[in-house]
Image 1 (cartoon, rainbow, N blue to C red):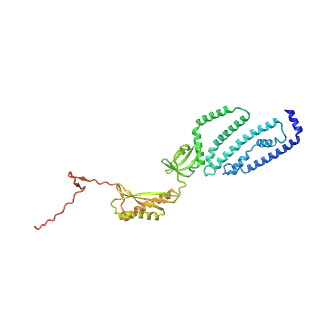
Image 2 (cartoon, one colour):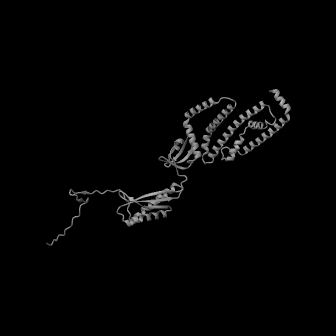
Image 3 (cartoon, one colour):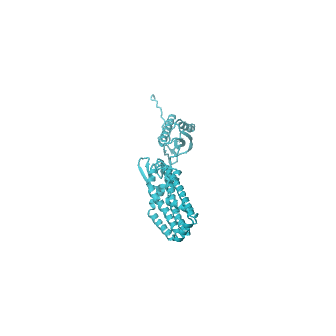
Length: 367
């Protein structure tokens, strides 16, 4: 082997020198690209874009990979002996597999950071999750890279793959709660069913999101208490978000007594509409909806185009008081549940619940 190599150097020394020069040029070009990547990788913790992710990925190019790329590109120019060609190809394969794992790691972590840091208030969540995410991504990618390298060395990796699969299942079962909440946190960050500061409701709870953590989400209820719920449990519920709600539709159910004259009842929708318009809300509809057990039932629907619940609450309060005031001024009585009991004599004749008024006879005292 050494004799063949020395003979190759003696015969092809000119081509070898040219190949070495070309390899140096290729290496310098790759090193220049790496430096450009370093200039565009951005600062850790700051909001990053796709250019920064690409810059971070390129900046992680190893010198070993650049050397092997240069050697692989010029190896065939000088008609190298088979042993040298096989060695270059083998080392190039190892360098490429490892470099691909490094690049994939940077792309995945960079995209996660870009997505999370672009949202206000998610930096702390990312900082809590990033350590574990980095370990999981690194172990997974380099395990795959190691299997590929061993396979290229001629090692039978079937048993190794099976062992890794069984080990992964065991670890997953042992830490399924942690992984479940971790992936739920990432799902909240990426899918964004809600954000920090939004008002949401689930089950019988209405609260404002204070913090989205690695394992749990912390909320502040409208009544003031702090609620903590695991991310996995929260995502299994039907969540209503009020953040993007530009208006709210409110309803009033109004009942008046059956003694209300029809012409007065006919005026009620117009009265309600005037009240809503005067107070700055948007009238939707109002009308008679049915005969209740103790009332003639009317319904009022209106919309309030205000973002804050406090403002909406105040408008509803004012409209309710205005309805009460208008009805009192017009003599319209609100109904409330009442019952009247009637009794009958044995012959079926109705007996009034109060005594009958007896006629008064006049008496002439002069006679």
